[in-house]
Length: 158
Ligand code: 4NP
Image (cartoon, rainbow, N blue to C red; front, side):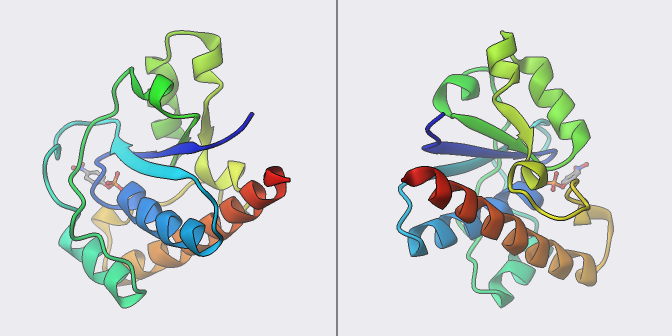
């Protein structure tokens, strides 16, 4: 499967998936890989809101800008608009697969850190309830996952 459009999915779309989207956008551009990235949440509570200020701050320290992000909820058309829907944790993955209309669509949904070939943990911990250290750790984990993503996409180019 040619992967050209990636959608990262978490619960609220204000912490993990916007972070991974920003990191992926930057690292894919650096690698000159022509891949579109976006993010959304399985829940709609934060739709229209910006990213969590704690996430914005931790991402900024690492050189990633989340200031323009606006949260949105996953919808059924995302299975047509994106090649892969990469979920942050198994609960997100179940929600995504629950919205799939066909087994093929369900197969488009994977666990982000699994698809990227990362070392365990394969679930991306939600920093939302934690402290600043948790948000800094999320940035590190996003960088690791995205490094695996870039590697995988690079290897599938040729
Ligand atoms: P995210 O974090 O899924 O990484 O964006 C969360 C944000 C908000 C909530 C839960 C997780 N919430 O319950 O509102």
